[in-house]
Length: 488
Image (cartoon, rainbow, N blue to C red; front, top):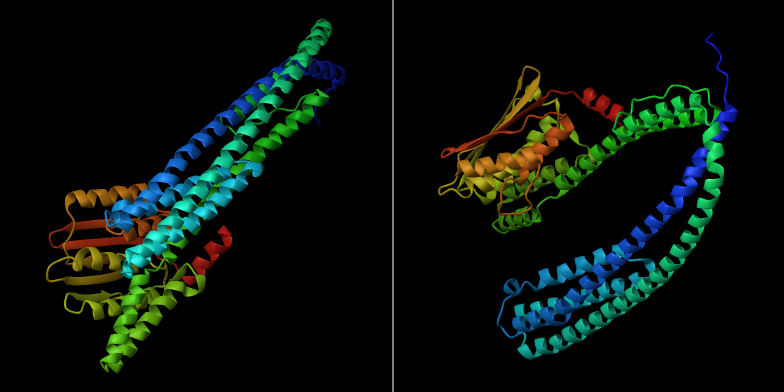
């Protein structure tokens, strides 16, 4: 057994008294600074919000009605006027202001936002009337409604500004009261502190300073990120409890950081699941149109094949919410997709799939190949004069599954290829439909995340077409389930 330390509870109490005196002097000053900074920030935010509302008033009462009138009078088209973009910007600004505003002043913004929806509906009516070739006089009537609603929104914004001014006045009064009370408290505390200071300094023992210094050093290391720093036990009763709490805090911080990292990873998975679930509605519309066209032409067998292919496509896309599916199902998925697309692009597209049945029982993250095939079709084969072919292959190689999607389409310039590789390195898929590469960047991100590997897709492109390949670890059904149970 180690030597039992004698606790210095009296010295600990004296030390605590000294700390309290320091706190008595510092806390009022800190409170004053915090209050002034707090109210200054609130004033600044309030002014910013009122300036923002002032700019919105011009947009609502002038720009939007003027843009709508230019459309009605035929001076501009909807795309030229950008009226929807303007309305959307106003709505986004109102939502942002509502999040920053207190409950008591938020109502005007909420009602203004709802009224903006009404204004947008009138703009929609103008668009529908123009599309239906309705006489201009009808749209002129709608314009009157647009102006009235714009005035109503302007009135609500005025109400909001008035409420913000009242709130600012109340804050000013509260600040003056707090400053006065704090000044009085500081004067009283300084007098008391001066009377007690000499006694506290004399009775402070040097033996108490060491554990305090150790505590400060450990706290500094923790603040710098060294969460494995631990404080040695002390013989001062009060500091012993504090030491225990700091050590506990460091341990909990480590656990919280680990959990935060896991939560961020799960959130990224959820975001990518949302991306992969966004099936293009145009693909569904075009496929159904092709089925109807084949049915009207009396091509029964083609209708059956297309319907089965579409059914397989969506069934495997959903997979009952599963992230991992057998390679045989992934193969069937791209077969269904290519059968459907070949019906539409029979004269310009051929395809070949070379994925042996021997690897069909291994599991793979679903929807890895279909986006690559889609990219090859729309950004390679379809835009090339005379069309081209798509080749999909897969094989087992040294414990890895190696897949390749190659096309004989238009290919990419060196600048386009480098831009795509840079987006993959940064993990930034574009949302532009004309930009290309969204599917490639998304697949690359998902492979990185789910397989925990840094290797990007291997992309080669030239005048003879484009080749996209990747390799992932070979996994069985049991290995997939074991990994998910451990991570869960």
